[in-house]
Image: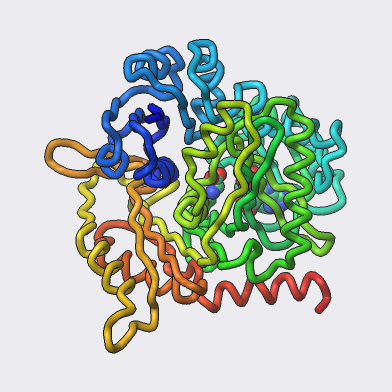
Length: 449
Ligand code: AMP
Ligand code: GLY
């Protein structure tokens, strides 16, 4: 039976979700604030609307008689879109507002971990009084991470000893008008992400991914939503052991146990410290860019996961291709502090697709060294009658898939050059052997090896 699925959100992550459903027995509809050309092409209908307006989303869902809705970004979850869809009798794969607090309220998240004995919680304190927070910074023996309790698109955190001094941190707190902040122990190590598909008390995890938050090469500059990411052909990353991966899964498992009816994606962001994985944060959705690493290697039909979730059944076991992936984002000049919105973007999709076919073709006399696949994902661009334009967020991403990270990186770079990167910025260092080796050396050093 054909399922009618409504996809909410118009970024690279949602393009990856749309593509994961393409070819399954679905009638796909989508809605977002921007018209994403990649999603619009796959979907049977695309509506531009305010996705944080539950009534508007429900109205569109009802008009297309959606059976299942997939909520991509966090803002609609925080606005109660999953709750509103449920009330209208439409199954939402995405947590209700109360459960989404695991992401949307960092003070709740840390308290929840403490109350439920979830391992990997750093020392933390919550403050409503900003002067009391500044006094805590003066008293605390060690560096702290300053986190606004609410959503900031990953851009509100300042780490003392890394991005700011203690004085700079206090000035940041005083100059911002946050109602509540969390101060927590600065964790030292390597970051990684594990995403879990959750429903009916079941959880199925995907291979680990490493995102790159900083805007510029060498991990310099301001934090962004994520400039690019890689995953390996195994579940763990080159700087991790299988035990580190399992420890992260156990942490996610403990969260799912504590949240009774969680459903959707539960994303754990971890710091691999000298004492093993500690939690940086949880997200109530796929990561962006991480979805673009995970969904292209998911061999299990994503629709099967959605229908099992909806029907109250056990989730299918997930199969992932043994392939490495490297994702690189092209973002507007000036992103994230002063992004140039409204610039025309020229993307040569045909060349990327042709190159992907060429690299895929191993039947030739001279098989290319970097046999693999290249994919292009549109993100927060807006398609208008006369072309595609930048918004204030990330524009498009390319993903290379191959047997090794090094090969996948080379493919991603080729694809980026072919797609056209004029007027856009990207981090070429993501997934390059030097940077990956630095991660391995860093962890070895922390472990005293
Ligand atoms: P978040 O918005 O929680 O993902 O934080 C953004 C970035 O801040 C993370 O990717 C980390 O690089 C950094 N960060 C957050 N919390 C900590 C912490 N406790 N210790 C060190 N770095 C942190
Ligand atoms: N890549 C980080 C995030 O999706 O929040």
